[in-house]
Structures are given as C-alpha cells and as structure tokens.
Amino acid sequence: MVKPSRRREMAQSAVNTGRLNIRSACAAFTISEGCYRYQPKLSDENAEIAEWLVLLTNRQRNWGFKLCFLYLRNVRGFGWNHKRAYRIYYELALNLRIKPKKRLYREKPVPLAVPMTVNQMWSMDFMHDQLGDGRSFRTFNVIDDFNREGLGIEVDFSLPAIRVIRALDQIIEWRGTPCTIRCDNGPEYVSELLATWAEKRGIGLQFIQPGNPQQNAYVERYNRTVRYDWLNQYIFETIEEVQEAAIAWLWTYNNERPNMANPALMLTIVSYQSFGSGSLVRRKKPMQRPESAAGDVSAP
Image 1 (cartoon, helix red, strand yellow):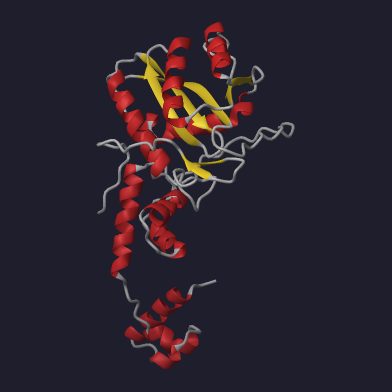
Image 2 (spheres, one colour; image 1 turned 45 degrees about the horizontal axis):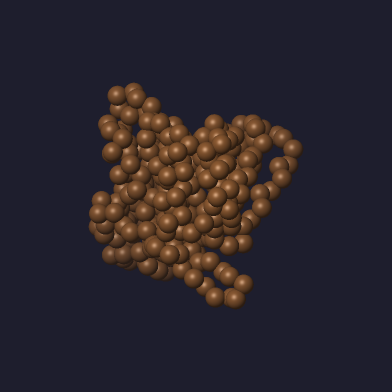
C-alpha cells in the first residue's frame, strides 16, 4: 500500500520530466488533482512543539511520549492534540528503546489493598547507590499508598533505626499520623526501638512475608522511578549533593511529573483527606519548591 503523499511525489516527478500531463498523472497514480496541487501549511506551533519535546527528553531522559504529553497538557496547559504531538515526536526520532523482558510465569499474585484515604497506609523502603569515589550510601524512601505521593527521602551512609524514626517524625509533623506503615523485614524495621515508637504513636507496622517484595509493590514501583528518573542520571561526589538533589527531585515528582495512576490529576491536586463528615481538608503543609529543582523545565 503506497501512501497518497508518496503517490503525489511520483505523479509530480512524472509531470516534471514531461512524460505525462497533470490530468494523466493523477489518473495513473489514482490521486485527485486537489491532492496533486496541495501545499502543506506548516504551523509555527509545530516548531514550538518540537522545541518542548526536545527540551523535555533532554531533561528527563527516560520519559516516553505519554509522560511528555501529559506534562505539556496538565502542567504547562497546552491544548495540542496528542496525534499531532506524537507525529512530531516520531519525526524527531525521540522514541525510547524498549528492552524486551523475559516473562516469568507464576501464580496470580494477591492484589494489594487500595487505601481509601490519605494517611491510611504508608510504605517505606531502602535503596542503595554509590558516590563518584565508590563509597556506598543509602536512601530511605517513604510514600503514601493512597496517591503515590513521595513523603520523604533521607540520604546518608548509614541509616539505623533511630534515623528512620527521626525521618518519620519529621514527615508526621506536616503530614499527620498514618494508620499503618508497610515495610519489609530489614533489621531497622524489626528493631525494638521502632516497635516501641510505633506503639506510642498508635501506628501499626505491617511486615511483608520474607522473599515477597511484590507485597510492597507500591514503594517498589516508586523505587524504580527514583532509580531511573534521578539516581541513574547523575554522579554525586558528596552526601550533601545527593540530599539536595533528592529534595529537588521529590518536589518535581509530586508537583510536575504526571501521575500515571490518575493522568488527569497531579499528585498535589488529589492530596485531600476525606473524613466521616464529608469535609475535605488539604494536607497541612504543602511541599515548597526548592530554588534549584532537579529536572526543572523552563520555557524554550
């Protein structure tokens, strides 16, 4: 099947070489004379769309078309049609290479319970990485399972139970107390210190089964985003650099990155808590944008 645009080119070539006139060329290549004479009108918006797409893919190297388009539509407020934006995205060859994965067949897992309100269930987990000089550091990640909002990222070479408690206390100051926190069976989580703190706070600790990280899937999926959106993009020299970048990236994640669980809404838009009276209360203290936000995108 030959596209009309290609048949128009062949017809124009036949006319330009003098072998056929316009009417005969259109009949031979089964196109109308209107199609033959059509001149595409290039819009100035196409160049603007291309600039934005190139800018976004340079800043957020692992964002595909869907995230780029949702950012332009929901955050920047552009009303461009998705088919038009994708055509330009495709012409610029910005498509991500998708690595094939070997599918492991296993029994159907038990689906995670979906929280109904903010602060009903939090999840926490650790990640590991290295500085430029080879020293290993850890990150302590906490999210709200209700809307996948990142609540905090604590970074240091060592994060014992007392540091975990301090980080959770800082989050509770502005966010409020959760009903339950889901975690794995790491030594920091099963310590007597954390158990005593949770009992005093009236917080339940829900431990997943050993060797079953899928039972903590919300934070595991969040860790993947942290890894590919931020950690893997930079080489850090000091812990202070990592912590500053973590705060900046967390602001971008919560306020600008499209929420794939609910593409029509940003995370801060759905950060409301519903009570029995039916009233809606916004979270106590919204996160402030850092002066140098990682991944910040300015207008081209």
